[in-house]
Length: 336
Image (cartoon, rainbow, N blue to C red; front, top):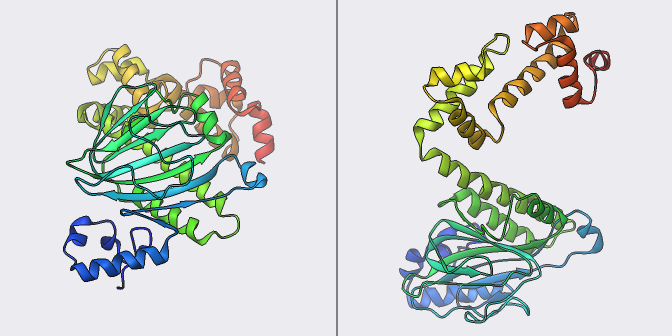
């Protein structure tokens, strides 16, 4: 048997694509299972997982990974799978609480999720859901559908801070990101690194978790925004026009008027798409241009201020210092 499992990467279909597995002869399938058992510490009912330790120095990094795994539940198979370490196995009716975060991705199948904050909610193919420490939860695949599920468990101040800032919340644990080879590749790479247990692997795994969360967060928001192509086109046109008119007196109100929408509606859509109000977007770009002019020309601060349509040199200097911590003259001296 040449192929490795879904984590190994040499022949992804032997573990991930269940349709291909079903085509294997009974003898070949048995050999496949034996191969899996020889390569992984925990394998039961098409489930494999790896548990990791972190030292005190690792914890100072801000994020450590404690577990990573995969399971393939076919329609009609029992759930939860066995082979989990203490503290991870749970009864579907009683649920459980973890002392860590877990990020679970379902590229195939369907299921149900419930937690202390949300009622029973369907999980569809392409969904990611985030478990929070100390948060009661339960979940399972639909018996008639089954699912394929990847998970990674982690903890640390890095993630705690994002929760405090409101980027992540137990009130919104499910993200609809669709099927993503990039996300699958990150899970598989994390498992490969975990299996090797090389020195300082916790830092690499922490980077993968950050990448996964960043993709999860941005993919869902872009999917939502891109559903309305007219709005996307409008915001892209507005951003381009702002960039091309930094040295003109073009106002945000004029841009909204030319696009045929009210200023309030335009401002709301622009901020939803970019995360920043249009006037602030324009100002930040003008300040970036000011840095270029201060570094590459001999124009006076007054000339630069009026060239970029600031109300006055004093107003320009105030905004510049707020952003950079330096007066324009100090910035120029530092760059030369």
